[in-house]
Amino acid sequence: MDEALEEAIEIAEHARGKLVISHHHCTRRTNFGKSRPSLARIDEARRRIDIGMDVYPYAASSTVLRLERCDIGIRILIAWSDPHPERANRELPDIVRKWGCTEREAGERLLPAGTVYFQLDEGDVRNILRHPRTMAGSDGLPHDRHPHPCLWGTFPRVLGHYVREVGLFSPEEVCIV
Image (tube, helix red, strand yellow):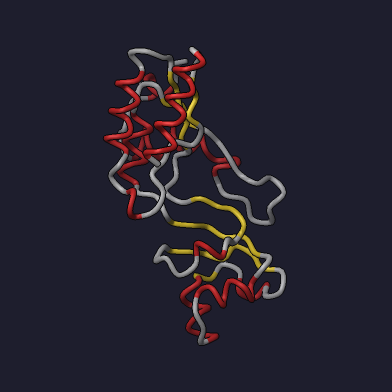
């Protein structure tokens, strides 16, 4: 994460351009807590270049099953599987126990499949979301059988969860354009 951020800042400075960091987040446990230093680095670079970013307001992401993410200790929910549709809405460790194999072996058997990866820290999501140069971003695979809620629910989540339930900011703050 640090190298990618530094590279993006360096390119924007060299080009004398603006920088938009898309989907700024701290993925995987080894990066939990890094939102504070990354935001501090962004603030420091903002003295020289115009930087903005987006973040989707969820601590989970959704995409196709990637074998390299198996066996690394993150929570993985199988959203769908072509060869094993009966395993949809099951967590990968449950499937592993049933099949008596490793996560990677189960992943190979499930492919093609869609997943939800619980690999983000809620504290980091909140830190990034509260930053004055952040906008909420929606994302998702619209043709996925079970798309991530951020495809259609990003802005209701910001207003409902982060404004009303959590009190992260006021309705006025979140609606500033």
